[in-house]
Image 1: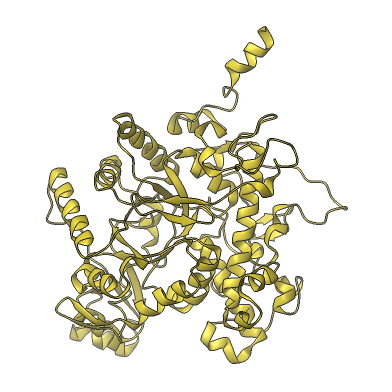
Image 2: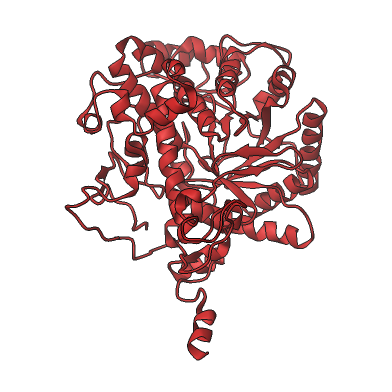
Length: 547
């Protein structure tokens, strides 16, 4: 049971359209939503949403003092009354310097070739789902401007009817090119574009195509799995012709569109859509040693064709697979390992599978720290890690970084980071009807939830002029409103994280430690290894009393 989130948050003035999950997002997030959950509203008003509404007329009190069950919401953040750690060389410990805007959120990850990022955040894998394609400009440009990694998920080439593939060699991949080029256009040296590989992508020659055309402008990512499902990726198509195309491309399509009885049922309307599935990897491997051998061969091959940065994405498998991911990634000197726990989002996963399979994020991430520490104790340089699986708010970023410290360098957000893309596109489609189809806007008019903020983009988006300052007035005409909303939401997350870090007296990310969080109940203490609230620093307290 999660005591923190209900459908209405009176303090912030936010409302969830559907049932809120552990992350605070609705379990079903709609692109046409008119608001206004916390992530949705922060994409307009930004850091203003850090504070209770109606200042001067209200007082507010927390309602999350009872912690039930084991989740990230049952971890609490430590604060201190003295000291300051991690201030930049140009700053002193004077109170005028120890202010939250001076907290540095810049960090980096990687083995030999470091990737710099402006804040410890990355997107989830946005692959062949149509919603990723429709809103890609907002996601990619927003992420690039903010200076964080954006991940192109699996199957993008395979589902593109305009791509040309012949015996495992790609000669044309317009959708993949569009996605990479959109991100790189605004890249200023921070962040990265990551291209993911699954079984079909490997067969189709995606790695070779990216290496030849883009070289080390991209990070290549091997995929073992994700938190939302225990099978390969899926999309749904409503065209028989497209389903047949995907079947010929080598995908599993359900029901089989080549069967006469299925075609007849489709013509009659009994079957209205087809599900395209990717294959399971590693089906010919029977032992852990063979998994390692196959993995190392894959990494060596990717390096041989020119990739200097390689990452791995794994899902919420059990402890053996988690240990393999950490150990093999460390041995192979990979640049990043993303560990996605159950609770992570989806474009299209079987619902009851998502509800029932895998290891919940907090349990998986706790064991990841334990296993990484075993390798570190042997003198190994553990692979840099990213935690994923049900994150949306700034306190969750802090908690995940602390739980995995010092190995966790950033946090991966999927659904949360897509919401500003939808919202911005809907607003742009109303204010500029001629662009509505291009940006995939869903609204005919602005709802009251938006007009409460303003009537035009300059009024609506709190960060409009921050983006304009970075790019100049002339370039703003090329920036989708979804990217401006992305920046606005990221600014709220960044400011909130800075405030939490300042309260913990940690002014740079590498200073965050497991000692900066504590467990709100004994069950969470047992599962995470994070001491209970009443025991953290208890010995020091008693020394003070007995001095």
